[in-house]
Length: 219
Ligand code: C5P
Image (tube, rainbow, N blue to C red; front, side, top):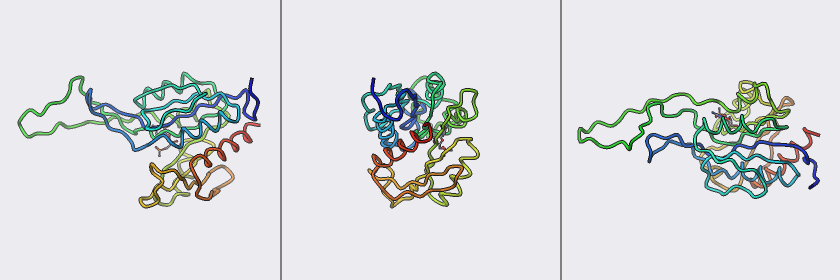
C-alpha cells in the first residue's frame, strides 16, 4: 500500500463537459477540455488518495491509477457521483450543462422542406455540487469551481454561499486570458477565511497546490 498524506482517503473528482442530446447525433455542451480536473485527479492520486474520477466526454484522456467512471449527461454524472459516495472530499471541476433538451428526439431531426427550424425546449439539470454539499452524505470537504469573466471574487463568494460548498476555486476566463483550453490558470481560492489570489501558473501546478491544500484540510 502506498503512503502519502492522502493515503486511505477517498476523493471524488468530476471533470470535463457534459453532453446533452438533441437527437441521436446532436448535442449541446459547455466548452471544457477537462485539463484542470484531470491534473487535479492525478495530483490527488500522487498524494496517495483513492480517486473516483467521474468524467464527461473530455478532450484529454483520464489519468492512470484512478477509478474512471465515464458519463455523458449531467443526470448520469449526478448518479455516478451519488453512487461513489461516501467520500472524504469531492472536487467538482466539471463544466456541467445547466440545461438539458426536454424534447430530445429519439430519431435524427430532419429538414422537412418547410423552412421551419425545430424548437428546442430546455429543462434544468440537477446541480451536482449543491446536491452533494447539502446532502446527507456530505464529504468533509466539498470544493467547487467557478469560471467568471467579471467581479470574480464577488461572484465566487456568492456562489460559495449558494452552493453550500467549503471552497470555490474561481478562475478568470475572460477572453484574451488564454485560460480556456490553455495550459495555464489564474485562480482565486475562496473559503470561509476569504479570498486568496494565486499567481498565474500551469494547470498542473494549480492542481498540485490545491491537492496539497486538500491534504492539509483533511489532516
Ligand atoms: O453555477 P456554476 O455552473 O457556475 O457552478 C460551477 C460549479 O458547480 C462547478 O464546480 C461545477 O462543477 C458545479 N456544477 C455542478 N452541477 C451543475 C452545475 C455546476 O456540479 N449542474
